[in-house]
Amino acid sequence: MPVYNVEKYINDAIDSVLRQTFRDFELLVINDGSTDDSIEIVTSFQRNDDRINIVHQQNLGLSSARNTGIRNAKGEYIYFLDSDDYIEHDTLERALKIFSVNDIQILFFRANAFLDGAQGPRESESIQLNKYYGRDYLEEKEYAANDYHRLVSQRNNFVASACLYITRYKVIEDNDLLFEEGIIYEDELYTRQLLLSASKVFFSKASFYHRRVRVNSITTSVVSEINLVSLITVAEKLLELGKKYQNSQLEIDAERVCNRALSLCMVDNNFSNRQNLIKLVFRAKLFCKFKTYRRRIFIVRFPFLRKVYRFVLRWRQPKNPFNEN
Image 1: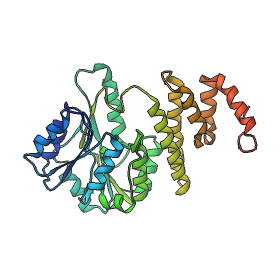
Image 2 (image 1 turned 90 degrees about the vertical axis):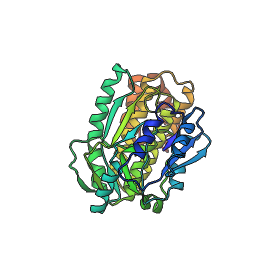
Image 3 (image 1 turned 60 degrees about the vertical axis):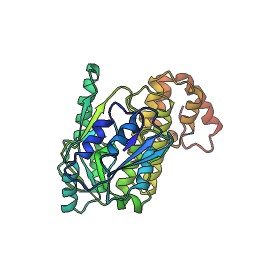
Image 4 (image 1 turned 90 degrees about the horizontal axis):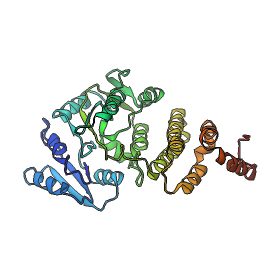
């Protein structure tokens, strides 16, 4: 459980873990440089329950905190719980039963999204999230990892959240899997890397997880430069993975992530470092890969950049495989 300035919510998160009907676990709390009373609250729980282990680090972000958790984990299974959410009291017991009767490496499950306080205008967001998390078209059963990835990706419904699955630790350990640090949307990359390393998974229709929809969380805050940089980073790495494993679905996933990045360029005009971000888009490998979206960004929203791009094309003509007017 990575923790950074969540004093308002941490009680619910930790209480949901300590109340589990399955009792034999370790709760690793990674203090990612909190400056509020979050860790004081965790410490008060720790005094009464020795299953809690607190690891302190400077503020390096969610990916780094999760990686610290991976490096310190000792159990047979590993689960990532966000510190502003909570899980059902029988989550671990029911999950272990599924693992015990199925030869699987990963268990995927559903979530229930709920509003944090009186946030009427965000109600539609929680409804959409629940539909997205539901994956109603999937049967509750065991899947080959590749089949699961193909089924959800073909519907553009790859639920990447690390909080919505439990993994055998050996899969992570044997494949040296860590979250990409310095970005957000890291789950979009990590979960797919995990699937590539697994053979069989199980999808459960149980909604073990309760996700709090709040204004100031990482995923619901105002769009900034890090959103664009992160999406391009994820898209490029997915494209590389697709080529490495000859997995065409991963290349399609990369294209979709690329589209999200270019959409941010089109609709958000508040980037403080806009010129450097435009250069970043130009340099991205998949910018030359997916020409449909090149047309979209230049013709529809940035006609003035089209002139610059045409100049770049002429200048790089011998190296560029496309010849657009």
